[in-house]
Image (tube, rainbow, N blue to C red; front, side, top):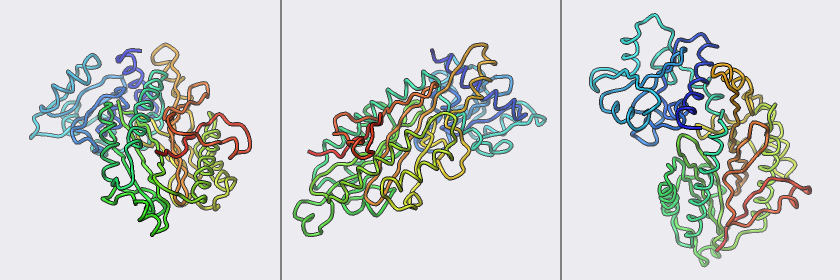
Amino acid sequence: MNKKELFDIRTALIKVYLINNGFDGILLSRVDNFAMATGGCRNYIWKYSDLGANSLLVTKEGEVYFVGNNIEERRILEEELNGLTGKSISFLWFESSPSEAVIKYFGTDKKFVSDDGSLGPNVNNELGVIRALLTVDELEKYKILGKLASEAMTTTLREIKQGTTEQEISARLVYEGHKRGCLVPVALVASDERIEKYRHPLPTEKPLLTKDENSLKKVDNYVMVVGCFLKEGLVVSLTRFKKVGKISEEIEDSYKRICGVDALIQESTVPGKTLGDVFKDVQLAYVKMGFPENEWHNHHQGGSTGYAGRTCKGKPGEKFPVLDRYYSEEVSKVLGRKVEFGSAFAWNPSAKGVKSEDTFILYPDGRQEIVSLTPELPNVNLEEVLKRPTNVIKSGMATD
């Protein structure tokens, strides 16, 4: 599938959404939605902003327009949208805004919506299902991105030693990601006693304890590294640990059991279910693996990914589908050929001092494949943890 063919499928998804909801067009300004609509193109200048520096207008007829100022127009049309669309609604940078430019171009009698509320109602949340739907070619992109992410993570872990600061670890992770053509919007690090305190640990100047410090403080001597890697709009998330000294049997055991929770959740993530259905198994998995019944209250559990870190988080009663079949049928009608979609997931169960997180893809036929495997690390013996065979693989903690 070439770039234009993927673009046609992505815009057909949006066209189906617009027709079904009676809208004339949608103005997409968010970075994730711009990438989703174009198959991975970039509209950002500030790398980690939700909103880009220009927009895309998609109409119910399937027409696509660049909408933005004169600063961005040439680069976007030549480097991002080249061969996809040449239509442009532009303005001088000091004269207007994308929403005003669209109204000036089309008039006020159109029923437009947007993903930021700047033009008609904000329908960003309704686009979650479309952000989650991935063609087979995009699933292949996910496999490539997963390999890059795992390489960046294992290289970073290899350089960690006692005395390394959390900020140094985070900086190395970002560097290794950028070196491989990935942005790293999330690079969280916690060491030693900080791991059990914070589920979202921003890195600090704190160094990993030395052996002497560790023996005096009597804390577990290990580090948690959390990374989200972004390339062509798609996101791979993974969490890994490294032992740099002694850790307690309690932490060793908890880590294996939380990996067991993650494995049970992945096994439950199958077509035909909603994320709410899967979440019932999330709750049961914590209890089955020996954690407190309400441990899941302490952190979100992850969920569907794709063209966002999480297109939808799993929670009780969530109706978001594991794999939507409707759009496949409708897009196939629009394009006159069969189009199938898969999806991707990143669950991240956690408990005091431990966490498990990987990204896996779900093919249209229901097959699963973990894309963030780190084969350099030892594997957790999940058959021993679950007391039965499983196809899921989870990495153990890295060591020197």
